[in-house]
Length: 374
Ligand code: F6P
Image (tube, rainbow, N blue to C red; front, side, top):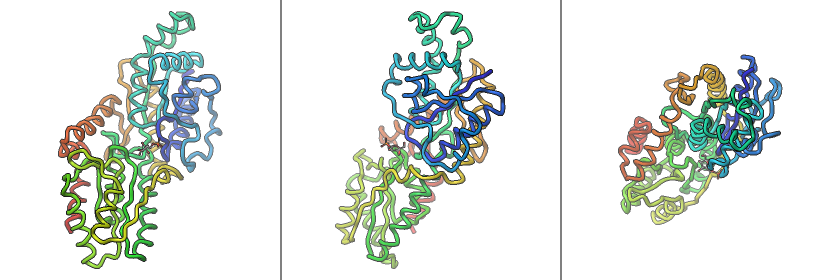
């Protein structure tokens, strides 16, 4: 009987529970024994009770639960080969050789490396005397399937990551609240949103709330000049009768000299314009709470396909990543998506912002620029 484990890793995201539920139930449907790894890679390193067999009813009601009920962690030990060897031993002990990992690009890169090293890790475990040749014989390969769980929507090759639309919804709701009080006092608000090196949350929230201005890492503003442009835009909107201003700053925002642009910098500029300005850093409210419908169905459809991908996998197939492209659930080589994702960060680091934007979703940027010029 095939034994498959599912785990969540890295920062939690709304919809991860729906993904785990779908993987567990689909696996059971296909006659597999299903396990959940508790506490992310830390749980793999600890083994034993951290690898818990899951029954159909164990995931009942999980669709509407926020966070990840099986826990997550950012493990330093798993980054070392010794740690991964321990994890391999714990999986073999339970008879598991297939892992569905729901996490961000860091977690998925770790998973792919684990699969790559697996044969040599198993050899070492035999050399160490933990297992005999006969015991490891059925576990020559590890199957890894990735699901992208992240609020950042930063993975190339997939239109949306599990959790991104929930976080976006939360941000919009919060900005609406802020707008109400801002209008009352005729104030300006600078709202900092998450997203790490990706501006998707800031960009989409800016469009959806009609913000005056946004700062994102991929569209770096000219160093020393952005202040005047920001003032011009906000003043123009005031002249048209707007009673408040909203500026959304992605936490990874930069100018074209790679200087970070923080909410405090932006606040100082708006104060200089004579606006009564406040800062709100939304923080982890963006990540918490229940998943919106989009993330629930995305996680469910992708979770179903993850199990199918495990069952269809051969040692020759590269680890697949389950994504969504133009409304279709797709599979692509995990390493390819991770490589493409890294290219955006590299382009930003080399101040090649046109390339960074072109690797993201250009149409949205264009749409936003048109919107800004009105
Ligand atoms: O990757 C998800 C994310 O929420 C980022 O947007 C943010 O930069 C980071 O995780 C925060 O991590 P932590 O919860 O460990 O502070």
